[in-house]
Figure 1: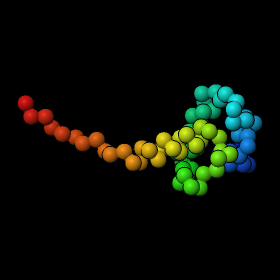
Figure 2: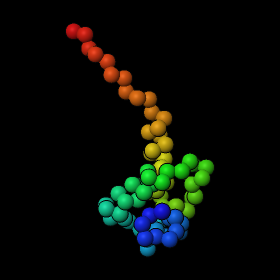
Figure 3: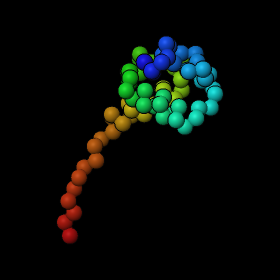
Length: 75
């Protein structure tokens, strides 16, 4: 859970409604929280802050990306 907060991003987040513009630092905190507390899509609540949902989705997509292949060029 995000430090100092009693609810898991339901309804309002730290006094912000989901539609209130976040400052840059707050957005980074939400994104970090989302990555550290990642849950599968089926377990996510639609009432969580959109930034949290977006970042969990981004982490999910990254997990499914193929690793870049390192190849040596032969001249």
